[in-house]
Image (spheres, rainbow, N blue to C red):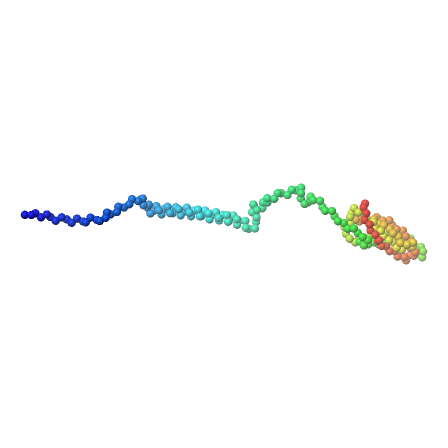
Length: 201
């Protein structure tokens, strides 16, 4: 009698290739930690940008604060040396004044009678003095100069008489009264300046 063996269970077929073992890698960084690192980097960059922008704004405001038309304190300071009081314009000597050299046409003259004695139809004995006037400004005349003014008197029975007056200190006139005689009481006297000479004192 032949004992039959119980049937063997079916064994699974052996795989043709071995399954790959997972490679050993660095432990994965948790996602939460990655997000935190990114936030730190972004925050630092934002802080730097803000600092740069903030500095730029401060500089612009500092520059624009002087745009109101008023110079800043630094702008009002000058690097030029202070003016020496000893060399101011006021200490410079005044220029020499220029005076006018008068001519005969710059004066007018008249005769003033100081005494008269007439003898009927025989004529008169007269004493006359010159009255001079300068037609310009007396300040135009040199106060240190003396002007000799020669004038001619007509009407004397013996002929024309030449006299000289001296003008000094711009307004002072020195002269000698003139005595003369006319042929008649109706004789008219005339006077004319003939020359002006400038001399020193």
